[in-house]
Length: 67
Image (cartoon, rainbow, N blue to C red; front, top):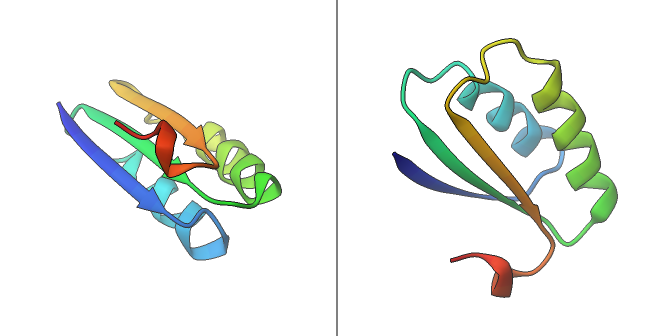
């Protein structure tokens, strides 16, 4: 399993997150943004995607929460 930190969940960041849903690899994705609304939009956009198998996504607003 690969661990990825996506720093920034705004428009471009949330689109990158959507693209990760198409990956063949097992992913542990940490999405970081200071803005809670950006994290919510990223979460909604990711959940719209159909190929989410073997993906764990964590949404955090502090880098202290990232392993």
